[in-house]
Length: 357
Image (cartoon, rainbow, N blue to C red; front, side):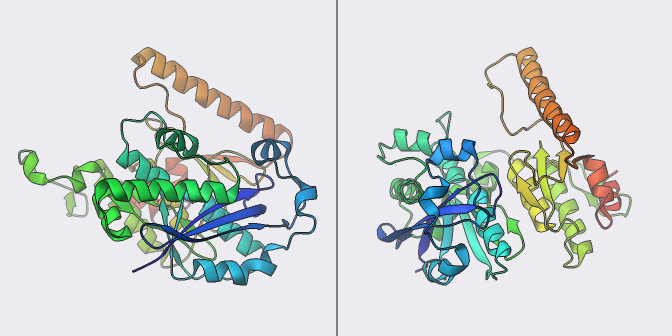
């Protein structure tokens, strides 16, 4: 049976390669059998005030700590052969990849799962699925933003979901909740995601609906499901790349979604192109992608009126635009791309999208 390595990173600043603490809890379903925490001296000894305010670690705490390249062989022994699990796993996978890249250390492909996505499926009635909110709901006592404590809290969420559902293995848990693994390589990250509810529900529960068939310009059948159509376009673009990574090493912030995909699939598509998808703009950011704004990073209250939703959405967009303008005025090179402009940068991107017209 495959082991599970639940991990959590803390970073010194907003650079993904600035890991300063790592915690790992090893699970052999469904109990913790080993655990360890490492303090890490980052390659650049700069601790941003915002990060210090979050986790309380400062430069003096890691002056005598080993650098990442000195502990990697030990850390790899803990991770080797396991499914990696974390809360907001895209962040931790990106830190792992970026820190190894900084020291030119190779990573064999590793599968990644996210307990935040699991929590959203296992406890859909909750308003928030952050680690702190889930810990409060499940009565998990922990010291937030200590790497090992966070890893153990994530493990507790995983264990509780498995216990409630009766899953005997990580594979059964994935099947029951529609979880799709991501993956981390030496140079890129594919984010974990979930499949739509309709894919894991009994199709006999809803009546069969027959849609009239339509056809693309190339004669192929036109998909009527926007997400399925988006996945077909994304697959065509990735096939045209032929293993090349047109967005290799580019740091992107995605506003909304792409190609009619959901948020997780949109981020996974960009990661497969070689991009490093960030949650917010920082000094590393090269591009801001303006996608479909029907789904945003921070959703307004869904109970609000349509007018209130539109006002909140406009406010979020305006704040982001002001941030971009401020950074540009300070000399940072930031490019804003529409979905069409992004597709134009990719092999046969525009042609693949036009095939649907």
